[in-house]
Image (cartoon, rainbow, N blue to C red; front, top):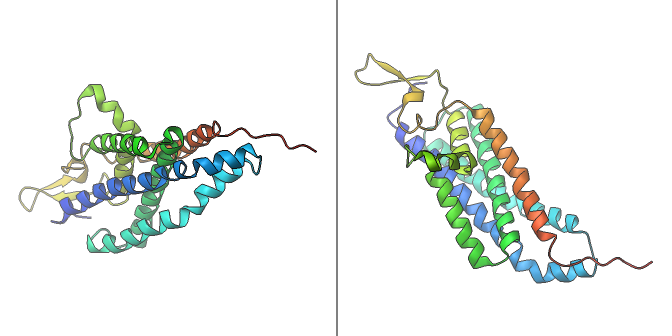
Length: 232
């Protein structure tokens, strides 16, 4: 596939998508546990139910809305932006987007459970996500070496790489210079700094974060309330 004149807009949209749908579920999830702390302390201290039951049901209840909104967003913007008009590419992009939404939600759950103060958790979440956003490889393409490692922890970076991989392949070319010259798409500005290789690594990194953030949230909730043993 040849890169069209809308390439910069398409690449910018993919990065915006990775950023916006990183922030939105994060801040939605941050409010989950702090607002229910008093109830959780009371219920756990009385031994009403296990923490695992509450945790699983709470995060599951939010899934429909968390997944429906980005699906509607992508269904509208995907075709408007002129991205590859095939079902395979569309569902690949959608899967990556929903995957990243779940990871960002996990980070929000972990921050809310650890801090338990809405103002502090929101500020901390903003700092973390903005750091991830800037290290994503789109706005700043030459990150200083002493902070370059942040991109490997960045949800935005891995999501952006996977979104690029859903649309472009390293062996594809686009017209550059005069009409008779072609260049590799991997050398295109906005893609080169991130690269199209390492798709599996980014997918595995997000999968680890998906589990790790929720595990951190669960462990943080264990300190709230003390479950009493029920007498026979």
